[in-house]
Structure formats: C-alpha cells, structure tokens
Amino acid sequence: MSLTTLRAPLIALSALPLLAACYVVPVHPDGRVYPPAGTTVGAPAHPAPAAQPAAQPVAPPAPVIFTARLYPSNEAAARTGIIAGTVTSPSDGRGIFSIAYQGDQLSGEATRTSSGGLHAGIANASSPRGAFVRCNYRMTNATQGIGECLFNDGARFQLHLGG
Image 1 (cartoon, helix red, strand yellow):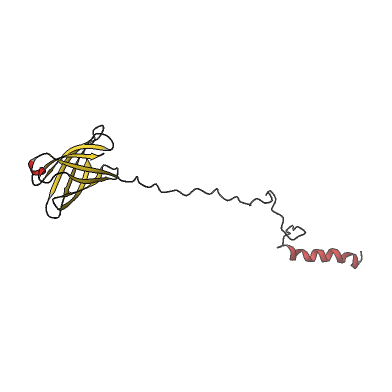
Image 2 (cartoon, rainbow, N blue to C red):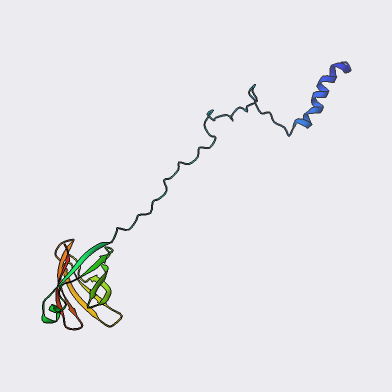
C-alpha cells in the first residue's frame, strides 16, 4: 500500500477527535432548522397550558333601604306628629337605623331577633344629646313590616316599614 493511498483514511481518522463534541443539525436550504423528530411543524414543542379565566370577585348584594314611617299613638307622640326615617339593611340580618326626632338626628342599628318563618327584630337609635328610641318590629313580607317605637320622653309610635 502506498502512502498516498493511506493518506485520505489517515486524515479522516485524525479529524475524528476534533469532531467528537460536535453534532449535525439538519437545515433547510433557506437556513431554517428542521424541527426535532416527533414534533409537528407549526405546533409549539411544548404546548402552553390553557389559560384559566381570571376569577371575578363577587360583589356583595346592594343594601336594601326601607322607609320607616312612625305614626303617633299617644299624646306625647301627637305633639310631634308623623316622623320618617330609614333602615339600611345589607341583607345579613343587621341594618343601620336613622331617624330625626324633635331636632335630633338619632342613629343606631336594626337587628333581626328571630329565625325560621317569623321575621321579627329590634331597632335602637340614639343622639349625641341623649334622646333614644327602641322599636320592635315584624316583617309581614320581604319589603314591608309593622311595629311599635317608644322614645325616652314617653312618646309611642306605630311603625310602618317599607312600602
């Protein structure tokens, strides 16, 4: 065997250690790399997880505002006449009770005292000048109720809620 015949195989064998850390990447004629085996062209190699819809916070129900009308039922109340107020209820069994009486603004709360089929409650309010009222009421349906209110000066009123 001649040296020229052995020259080509020797050159190839001597280049082998230089190519040991390299690998071949198949390329399209336009320079794009072929995708790895087993993938679909145009599809991501690892599909992104489906987007979860963002949880929307649930707004609490709007408060219900009941009109409170108080009609005199004794002489002390008759001197004042008919008065009006409000009960603002956030639908959790408690509400804010507000009423004007003889120049004072009374405020407090109304709370249901019963459960089941009876819808009774108590409403209390007071003013910074010392006036106060206590009302007992019973809801006759979802938007109306009746009751009685007694003020600290002895004035007694029939209470009508809603309407």
